[in-house]
Image (cartoon, rainbow, N blue to C red; front, side, top):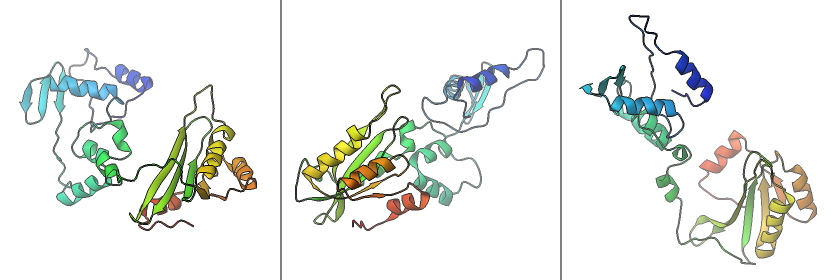
Length: 241
């Protein structure tokens, strides 16, 4: 039940069963949502758990009848399908299969998958004027954060290595100035490392790219299209040119 706004909550209030009808009810069919997003659903769930248990996963009382199971109940939810869902995304499996509320941040990536990509011994570097680095930039002026990540390929560890990163977050009254943030950071990194190439999302950075290219920085657009994002997420071999 994706009731997350005041407007949807008011709709729920308007649908209150009238006492003039002998049989009247509101029927809600849903699975668990994200913690703190649908307060109405969480309130109904907590209220239901407080009622006497009259059957397996079934609670009744205080004008409410709630069936809430944490086990897959549909006949087509076999072991193979559940295994596939578990591989897809942890939060989706938790909500849609186990019917448990999930933390909103887990919708991006679960920490076990994140930790599997980390080598604690490879820490960011302050400066190495002989180290060749490649940079990715995703920039936004007002609505989103701007991020820059510098990486290299560690031949000894045979893996991509984070060298440096910076993030800038705008506020309603203070949009991001690309010259003071993106350009300044790239010029700084060029002094500290061998800056081989910069890839950027061309949506808002064409003018910046022109200035950087004029200053001698090798820069190339990399649009965030589905084929491009799929390629960078599925490639097993890092190729830096």
